[in-house]
Length: 383
Image (cartoon, helix red, strand yellow):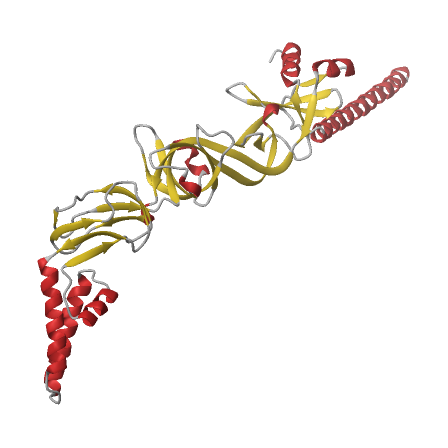
């Protein structure tokens, strides 16, 4: 009986111990789970993912912030403006350039424009020539007219043949650049002109004169080269990496090296399709007005092409610390507390740079004193 009582007494303490141990283990498991959930929530609220090292944070006293002159700016959306600076050469506008020649052979009787550089207007006489072929063509036209006037009317076939002969002779004169007015004058006088006057096809400056008084000229021979310089072209070279930034229609600013304060407005009107394999540059053509003919062909000019993008998230360029392998920006979390961010940059403008990754709109970035803050961060973290 006594042994049985002892056994019964020993059973109860063992059961109580096992129950207490199970209860403690359950409480420990619940506490560990709560701690894990709380830690994950805190990391999520802080903007960091589990398993990643949080970015370095530098805390400075108000006195030190004032001492190093910390200034900040807000990340915002705005256009990124950039200027591509290059040098261009001035050339005549090819659409306002003309050669003067004839379609008949003959001898120069008189030069009305006898030197290079003379300014002419459209329709102004340039030279007169004597051409036996032209005299013969005029006589044939006059004979056709007289035959039609003196001939007997009434036979339809004969009348049609006469009209065709007149039209053929007149067409021949027109094809030799004899004007309608000159033909009407020929009909009125009834006498062929021994000289033919060549007129200027457009207003401009005589760039080249390739004919002399008394010279014999042949069909197609260039006599004058005339250019209208009221508008000119500028041929500029841009580098290979600048090609995607330049578009037809973009505005540009043109200045001359020897003029101070004077500038002209030009427009990109053509981008050439081939790249120079030696200099790795592409030619861009700009057109502009030439007031007072101040810009002369073969002059060199400074060109600034304005490049403007749409609205992009940007920060000031001085906010970025570029180590060569990464770009760093310090974000002000609160006054005196600065967090280091590694950012991905896009288009770089004159004053601002686009941020593709690492910064959100409205965050304040350090623009002055960031070198000293970065030095403080390296001293504390060893990075």
